[in-house]
Image (tube, rainbow, N blue to C red; front, side):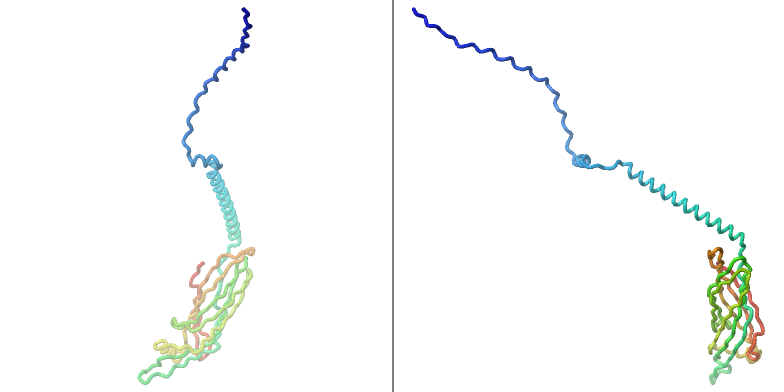
Length: 256
């Protein structure tokens, strides 16, 4: 018996062993819930919270430094002014009515009514020249402002004179004048009767001159605050002689 040769298929090598399993990793931690505000803050940069307070503190420090600087300068200027004032020893200005020149005085009573025994009104016309003397006894000059003087009769203003402003040097005397012109000012009833009686019987008319004089002292080109002096003068005029018969003046007050 012929046995056929039995061929066996080649044997395959055994498969390689499977690789060992990877080490088991820890499960990931759950993410916090999504917050839009936190996400927005993470995307953009914001300055630290202490930056605004530090800038405010620096601004306050600068303001304090400026305030102290200005205060020091003001005190320094005040001290210099006080030293100058104590060295100069300024005196109040002397401004007096020296002369009164009567150029014309006219009093004409208006025709009375048929039932009245005294004139119901009278008109006054006068032209007088007022001469003032300004004396400066200070070591510095004085700057006078424009001064106005009013002539009054029994509290009724009749006219006004103006003295322009001027500068007066130290240790000097200066004379300034003004003219007061009154053109037919009417006085009524009792005032008119009193004026006519004084002018015709007594030959005297009492007037009053009031005015304010403003002056400033100049030291090293610096002008001091203004000082105002009020002048009050009583004068008596003779209509017949066209002259001044009495004068008395004084300072009514001193104000700054």
